[in-house]
Figure 1: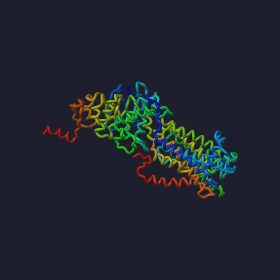
Figure 2 (figure 1 turned 30 degrees about the vertical axis):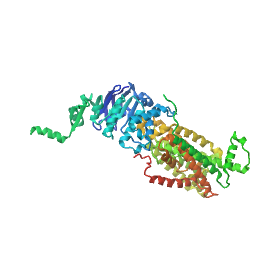
Figure 3 (figure 1 turned 60 degrees about the horizontal axis):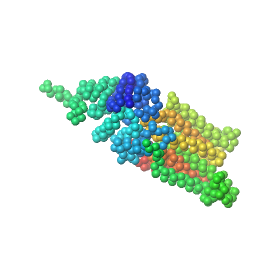
Figure 4 (figure 1 turned 120 degrees about the vertical axis):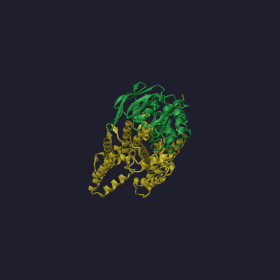
Length: 266
Length: 355
């Protein structure tokens, strides 16, 4: 199943946030969305999962306009792990993950043994099966994030949108989570702020700057010192890592780069 | 594929059974208590003698006056207490999900102040006298209906309900309607009328009769079933708009349905019992303390616990200063207030604030 944004524009408070942005995620492709803060990554994703409505342009899920499908049928095919997880009141982890089954349920339908199996499987995959009966508010930020991922998995969608999924996670769980998502072989689009993670996992990367796609391609094509300087305003040393075979970035702060630039002249 | 339906967990079934048993015991006790005390055996003998199939098996060995006390006076009153208690508790639980705020109660939409205007108009001004003995209930219901319609339309922005506006509109409409009933009271010269209005505002189940039990019972059952069936959506309301959208649920439509359902139930209950406070606020809190926030459990347990609570509150109202009756609102507030303070002092209970 594919997901595509076609010339999507969006404004908020009379301010253009997205300028005719087009991105395409092919079947089972892992696509990264990178860009500095405020470049419109989250806004683009929100337009793609119908929380916001594009001012112009269309979003296609499985080549069909998402605004012309019922929200329920979209939810069966498209799961979202959003950035915010504001849960008021208190739910058990198991209850929250079970909510991922909602789009598969008719109004008066009870949970089946299958649903429980799917929920348990999602808890297991995200490594939080031991937290099943814990209350959500007692969890750490990283554990909460994994609950949200488990809920998306319980939805059993073919396409998954992730908005900064590795936020709040420690290194081990960042890698575990990204590994898990990669092994699921789904169509994935993820806004990522860690460029090394993006380089390691993405098949394809789109770079957003001030609401426009400024560059796209494979990690090797996109992640260049010139682009990082221009878009992110940082100097980076980029090498191909000998274990991953992927680009590996080392950011170099200004004081070192100045020194480095000065030294040869001395 | 294993499509076998999974029963709710054992703890929940056990708890519901326990509460149901407690409710039956409470009802029995509440029927026994009063100026004429009655043994539990007679309570159930009389009740079963009224049920078509069982009546042939029961030998009639009680007096006519005992039968009247049990069947015509106490049974409808205790049943009404159970329905009002259960109804206010589920209405409160639903409203708290709707506004995502745990300090909300069923009266936050202006229902009770609307009903009070209607009741005051009947008691002081003698309005709607052509409705006879039902004038009070009917005009109280009309009053709450007017309040709901006002609040509902004030809170709609472009076909959507804004929760913030809903709360503010509820407050504004309540202010105006309370001012109206206070104005009627101030201008009235009748001392008795003022006391009657005060009694009404504090709530009482003294008006219970079989004839005015039917409508609240039917509405309660309908609203209860609908709320329970919609437990997934109620949970999603707590989770917020974003989660609901990504799970394929249109909350806007559901919010409108919910406002209408809860208002209808609250309006009907207030019309027969006055504005009994605290039940709709505290019962959902106690229930969340026991079973958590999942509305699959919150709705049925709230109904049971609310019913038990109000049956006892009404029994106390009848006997505390017998032969006079205490307004039930005083009792619910006296029981509810300290409990709420205790809840406030517990630091491991989040009032829905998250963290």
